[in-house]
Length: 274
Ligand SMILES: NC(=O)c1ccc[n+]([C@@H]2O[C@H](COP(=O)([O-])OP(=O)(O)OC[C@H]3O[C@@H](n4cnc5c(N)ncnc54)[C@H](O)[C@@H]3O)[C@@H](O)[C@H]2O)c1
Image 1 (cartoon, helix red, strand yellow):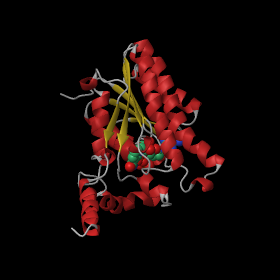
Image 2 (spheres, rainbow, N blue to C red; image 1 turned 90 degrees about the vertical axis):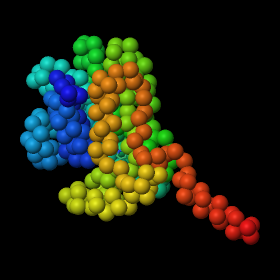
Image 3 (cartoon, rainbow, N blue to C red; image 1 turned 180 degrees about the vertical axis):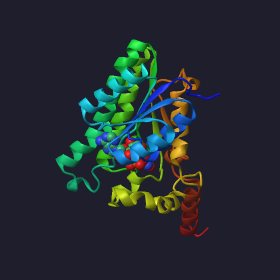
Image 4 (cartoon, helix red, strand yellow; image 1 turned 135 degrees about the vertical axis):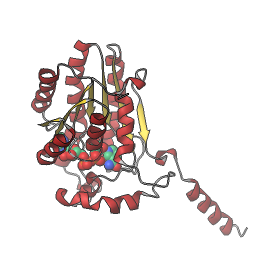
């Protein structure tokens, strides 16, 4: 039984990484998928492969987001799942190097984009009397040291926005949840280190290798790990889950790793001459 049969889903930032994997999984699970992104060539190619629609949508622009929601209603009659996933690493570096322009762009894509997607999906879902909205936050929302300053602030904003709105929309039978991915090799990780977008995909095996030992589960996370979590939040299997922050990180935010703790204990014992 396909888990998203007869459901209509709109996914932002779906031409790459987590959004792409989720679009592919949703389509395989029977959903009618409307993909959106600003990388139109990639987006259209994937959409053709999986039988989805594709629209150019910059999530930081209100007119683009409204246009996308209107398109879904006009062409598919309803919107069951809104996955507000588009995001950028944004302002990198130490605080004294962050400009107001970089700050504004990071917040505009990562937080304003989620606000707009949630607001306009919420309006049509309110009329329907149901729906599931899923936002992509990050482990950087709950721990320092997993992202740049403004990125972390934007994702903490996504997390608390999700929880706050879930209280309002939950009363209308609309669930609002977020997913907090850990270390996932995607083009965004390479681009944050200055790799051009057209080369970022070729760096994924190197990033995957580097992420293998970053968490207690000794393998890199994958875009499919996140897509499966989003699928659960989108499906009726999670129909009593609202205002939840689902961490999918191989345990990295749990605290200090056991092997690091044992190393520290060894060092202490050596210092004590034991
Ligand atoms: N990769 C990780 O380790 C990780 C960890 C935690 C959270 N996330 C979050 O996951 C989400 C997806 O990122 P990813 O890792 O798959 O990276 P990615 O770069 O592969 O995908 C992000 C997509 O968003 C699109 N995008 C960027 N700006 C946009 C805009 N203004 N409007 C519409 N689309 C836009 C990009 O074109 C791209 O296709 C982001 O919100 C990111 O912050 C990623």
